[in-house]
Length: 234
Image 1 (cartoon, rainbow, N blue to C red):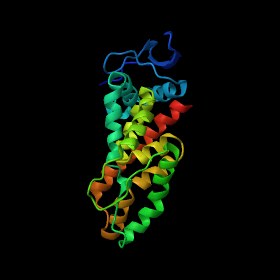
Image 2 (cartoon, rainbow, N blue to C red):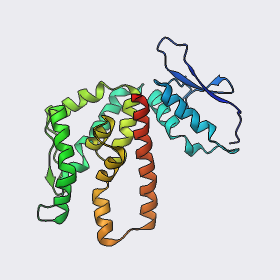
Image 3 (cartoon, rainbow, N blue to C red):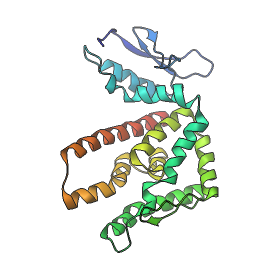
Image 4 (spheres, helix red, strand yellow):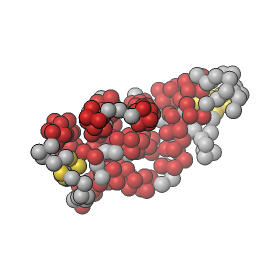
């Protein structure tokens, strides 16, 4: 698609809920689903406007990660928040940090050093108990733990839930996603924690160029989701 606008701006929305909108040549944008694209903070709107300003003569539809998350929140999450909560909660049921190597394996000690403090901190913050498993046999969350996490997620607004969903999906861990979303952990540290096993195997067996390229793309997505949540907080 060719660039079809000259000026990009941001203004306060006139609706009763407030919020901010991006304007192209003075005209407010709608979401990809056709809804008014109103976001909660000026900082997020300004960052989304920057995505439009940085387009060249040919618009790259892949270069709008913040817009895409905002649209997902408005078009999908807001209309089906309970379903999104259950989708995000599933990343606790299969949380990467719950599944450890065998205790005699050298990797186990590294998982204990990096992962265990994160799981313990989540348990303390939320008043829950998370499973730890050596091996790959699934151990479900205790019903009380699942319900507490469900209530926590249900209190989130659509935008926060959309950003958290992206973090959890890319990290394969709700533990890491919540630590980053709650500003308990630096996003870069969160990413490296999620990649602990991958990095361990790469040190043992070497790195594959195609796998590295995929990881770089996933890393960029994780950092954008963390940025999205930071812009909501500010």
